[in-house]
Image (tube, rainbow, N blue to C red; front, side):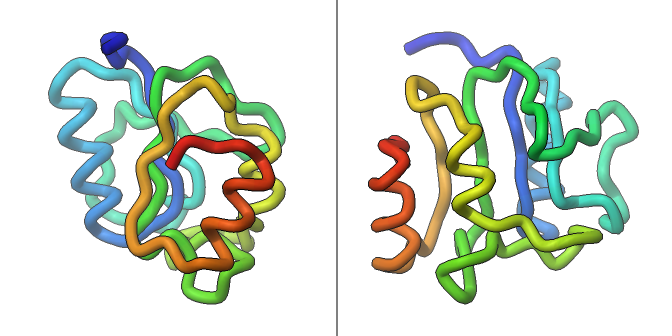
Length: 116
């Protein structure tokens, strides 16, 4: 398995903040999306937007992936993150980790050929 040096942590709640902080403590560069109003996030996390994703080795999406099958579960985000917009930009060759994936969200990921 390829070593993870850079990753994206997108959306989610305190569990995602803890994931980002843990990865940072392992000297992994962490790009965060949809955590703008979160507290407790390590200052070394790099905020990004979905319009231009930097190179990365893995993406960590929230649990649940979505509560409505349309938007990423992202209570700390300043604006909605639509799964189709994000999935379109994610690298198909990079592993994407998520949890509690509804059938509708799975179908959307499959349309974009993502490995969840």
